[in-house]
Image (cartoon, rainbow, N blue to C red):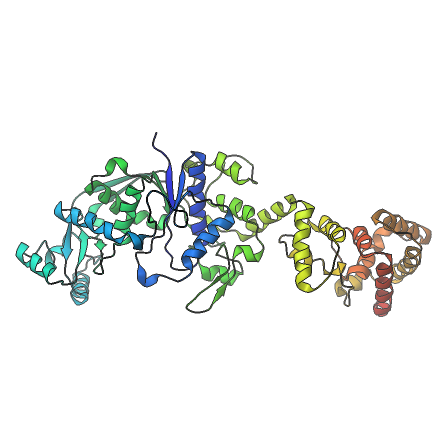
Length: 511
């Protein structure tokens, strides 16, 4: 059986889109499932779009989400270099071979001539005004010029490209692992440029040559590359590599949360969620975009979320470790239809993974936030706080954002709760509860609860009727984690002080 070798081959043209992370993940899962290799190749043939720092960003992003690279850029391996710009000399020989075998040709057309051709075809009513098997015979290339003319132009260094000579009448077939048989007539394909005038290969040639030389067995990539796949099939055929052609799988699109159209950075910005794995600062504009890491998403939660964007295990299980994803994964269970990018589901995954962390891990998040705020807190207190809050938080920062009342007494109170729950009965209970609390010796949550129940029983007032008012006096809010644990954490003196302040501040609320 052929060794499974997959590659993730991004272009360093900016931050890595979250859809690219999903592509890398699916490749990684397939490789690990079959004991194969995961390669990272940097496809930087388009030097005009190169963005400084983008390559390093890609490497860091993959490392953060837990995708391990076995071979490739930053790691090395037997097929180095893995940056296409450094492989430039090897591509020309394959382009020249295609020319020699009659499958490609030199084209010397200027930009003006190309524009005139497109205008001519438009005026003639052509649906697709392109350089193809028909229009090429009216252009300046090695198919229309004499051998002597071509030689002279090449010797004189006249700028030229090498184009693929697409057959005029041929049905090109591709068996996609996700979509089944895909058939395209060659008349729908234009004569793509394989080598640019600057001597750099285009994506199409470099991609096929590198996949062949690196012995890639499977190409898992986005749906946007499906229209190029027949062209790549032709290249494998013309280069005599059909038997070594990888199996293709074109992933479904990531759609906006509304489902109407492809997910874009603009959509994410408008809806207030990240679209990149890590923070990214555009070196050209200085514009900063927040990443999933900095927004508080855990890498294992993000991986779990991304895995389900197009794939399903065929079971009801939703929470997977990376190893469980590897064991369950198969390309055949990836759907064809586009899938909605439901950020609320991503938040749900994050919440589940936070709950699964130990209190020690969660306390570290809280302690980091407190250090930033200049607040001192012993570890025992931090452990109690995260223990009572962990069922409610979505992000690590929420321990601080939603738990400030553990450190600061409220100075304002929820008006909607006060207007409904702050009354004479509540004040009666709070006055007596405060007096009783101050007599307790090192009270814990159970003692606070027993004391409050005893006070309400003595006063003949139902505990349920005044509980929200008690919470309001302690936290300033009408809801939150276990109130008795909150009182245990802040201590009896602080409880008494907060009640006294609330009674004074809210006295006008009493009817």
